[in-house]
Structures are given as structure tokens and as C-alpha cells.
Length: 602
Image 1 (cartoon, rainbow, N blue to C red):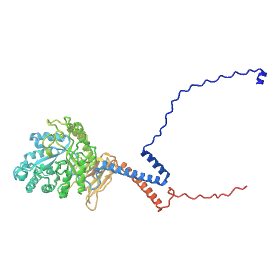
Image 2: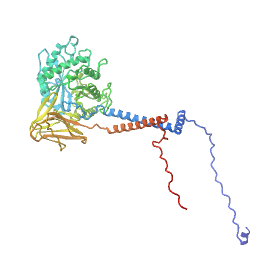
Image 3: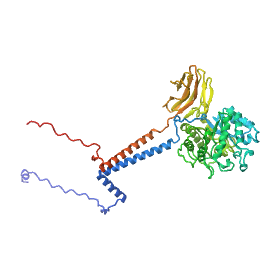
């Protein structure tokens, strides 16, 4: 300070104090309350802490977790496989289902309801809409009104009209005449005959008269209904007796006749057997030898065609799978199933679940699903052409393809469009027999019937056939022999090298292609050198879809389950002293090598 004064410096004035900012008033502190967690969470926390402190407990929990996760994945994969693939076939897995026809459009049409002058126009309309099979009642009461006296005129006209349009009749033989019914069933038009000899005579007369023009006979209709069995309790054994007599009579008159089992009612009266139970009883009674095709009544109900759930108590498209499983359980795995009634019911007045447009889309989608996934399914017959009395109790208006005034429904229009855009032009999954309409034959070919099998054979050099298919592979059912000539085979124009020459004659399944892109292809086969070419049909393969996710789930589940069980077993063995404890490591730690280098020199 003296130095400052000596030099004449003045002392700087003191700085004024900095004003303090006013702090906002603080809210009074609230009292802190300790919140207890729920007992379950607290117990879980203590348990987790205890496990974390115990290595063995932690290993045990991890092992159990792995095993449970693996088991859940395996169960999920099994459920998904059953749900997605139940009833689905690839077409070539033995035994191959023996189809007797192609799978074109089919319908129930009672042409006896039309006057003779309208038959030509009705059958022309069916042909234009793509209908190739018609299920027609052949009333015994009308054909044989008195013992030994036959009235053929009406049915001759029906058969001539159908066959003239390239439509194959399926004759349903039922409706007994009054003179052959038992006294107890005299008032029932579908009572079984009291004398089976008379029924045998009637069936033989029909088969002998129409021969191959009517190749399919269905013996009776809905015999599991008491109303169709003389108002008496349905009797599977009695029906098998009727079936045996009718089948033997038809085959005796025409060896090429194919016999259908009667259609069965899925939902009869409460005290009657449904279709599944009655079919099992037919097999137990030894009926399998007397029919070639199983018939099913398939009502889609309120479920979509994509619904894969199967229930014996509810109508659905997938009910056909239950029929198939009954036949499989009886060992009848090579016979096809025909849906002799098929469809969804629409309510035009708005009181029902489905509109006409929805009904039409469901029916077409169901056809496509059956063609792609079910090689055991044959034609699916539309429920009926017009409303009114018909087969199986009649055709309700909601099932009919035509309205009462004759105008087409959306279903009839959509079926015609489906056929026009080639919906049935390609052979679907499974066997395409040589009788299928999808084959295009060129040159001279003859038909051969060897037992239950039908072949086409030629000795005409350059004779050939073509078949469009829809699938991922194809197998030829061909005849090998010393007389077999050289053949040229091509798939989509690409040649396939095969030989049918053999020292001993035999039928063989010859793989032509596998793992093709899923879609349309064309197969052609031509006799290129002198010899014979005999073919029994082509089998179309379609790889079952959505298999790799199932395999991935199963593989992951099995791996996790195995790891969990292995680690759990290892832990138990260590704790019990059977194995030396390794400190939780799979391999022991290797000993350290001591320092071996010499010390540095000073």
C-alpha cells in the first residue's frame, strides 16, 4: 500500500457486492413411503437371487428351460403338420390311388324332370358349361313297373342325349317298385327289396342294355337313413348283402362296370348312424370287395374351403378327409373317393351366411384345393341343377345352379368361366387314367381292359399322345415287353430318355421327371420305331408345400430337447458322484507350462 502511495497510484475502489438471485420457494418435501412389491414378485426375486448364487441350480433351470422349449417347438411342428398336411398327398407315394376318370366338372341332374323335347337343350347347356359327368337316378319302380316288364324309353332318351354330348352318366339304382317291397316297407319308395333275386335281375338288365355307355353304377342311395330303408333301422350288413348282389350282377353283365358305394348321410336323425360309423360297419361286414369307389356327401356349411379343421359334428369341405381316413384304416387305400354331392348353400333372400357370389367363389376354390391336394379325390358333383325333388332328398334353392325360372345363378356362371379358362384342362395331382378327357390322342390306339386296369396300346409308328399336367413331376404306368418299340418322350419339349424293352412282360412305374417348377407342363410320348407302346396312364406328382418350415421346427425342437436332457443328465450324474465335477466346464483346464527361458546375463 505504501508503494502505491509513493508512486502516486490510486487504489481502485472496492467492487460492489453482487446481488443474489432470489430462489423460487421450494415445495415442502413429501414423506417417503416404502412400497412393498407383490408377494409373488418378491418370492420370484428371492428365488432368482438364490439360483444366481448356486451354479448347479442355474444349470438345472437352463436345462429344464431348453427341454421345455424344445418340446414346445416339436409339439408346435406336429400340430402345424397335422393342420396343414392332413389328407394332403403328393400323388406318387404308394399305393397309388386308382382313378377311373379324369376330374372334370360333374353335377347331379335328374333329367326325368324335363320333357323329352327339352333333353337336347339341357344337355347342350351342361356340355357348354364344362360338365362331363352327370349323376342320374335310374328308378327301379319306373323301369320295371311289373315283374319282368321293362319300360326303357325314357331312360334310353336320357342316355342317348348325355352320351351324344360327351357326358358320362353315373346311374344310381334305387327306388324299389311296390311289388317287391316287404309289407312293413310298402309305403317307403326306397325300401330295400324283399327278394334280392329280383334286384339282381334288374341290375343285370340295366347293365346289359347300356353296357359301356353307362360305365358307373351306384347301388342305392342314403341307406343309413331309415326313411331310405323302408322306415326300418338302417342295417349295414343288410346293405352289404344288397350291394353284393347288385355289384356281382352288374359286373357279370358288363365286366367293365365300375361300382360306387351308396352315398351316406353325414347328419341323419339322432338315433341313426352317420356316414363315418356306417362306413366302418360296411367294412367290418366285408363290403370292400363289392365296390370300386367310396361316395361322400360334402357340404361346405359355414366354413371356407381353406378351413382345414376336421370335425365329425360339423359340415365342411375337410370332412372328406375323415371319409378317407376311415377307408385307410380299413386297408382300402387304393380306392378313390367321389363327392357325389358337393357345394355350399347360398341364401338369395339374405337370410343365410353366404351370398351367391361368395358361394360361387367357395365352390371353385374347393375344386382347386381338391385337385391340387387330394390325389384320392375323383369328381365333385355339384349339388343339383334346379331346385326341387331330386337325389338325396332334393335340391334346395340355395344349392341349385339354376333358379326356378331357369335363369343361371352366379355359381352356374362361375363354373362355366372356370371351365372356359382351362380350370380342368390339365391333369391334377394323382393318376390320370387313359380314359381322362385331358389326353390328346393322335394315330391308331386301341383300348385294353385287363382286370380292373385299362390301357391304351398302339403299333402305329408315329402314334402319339399329349397330356397337359399341373404339378412338379410325372410317372408313366407303362408295359415293358420284348415287343416294345422305341419311344420318344418329351416334357415341355425337352427329351427324356427311357426304354420299354424287357425280356419279360411286366407293368412298371417309370419316372419321367421330378422337381419340376410347380405349374403347368406338357408330357408327350410317341412310338418312333416298329413295335408296341402300351400305356396305363400318367401319375402327376405335386410336392407337398410348406414342408421345410415344419422340418425346421422339428429339428430345432429335437436339438433343444436333446441339449436340455443331456445337460440335465450330466448335472445329475455330477451331483450323485457318478461323474467327476468339472466346474461347469466340459473340458478341464490344461496345466500351465513353467517358465523355461534362462535368465539374462548381468
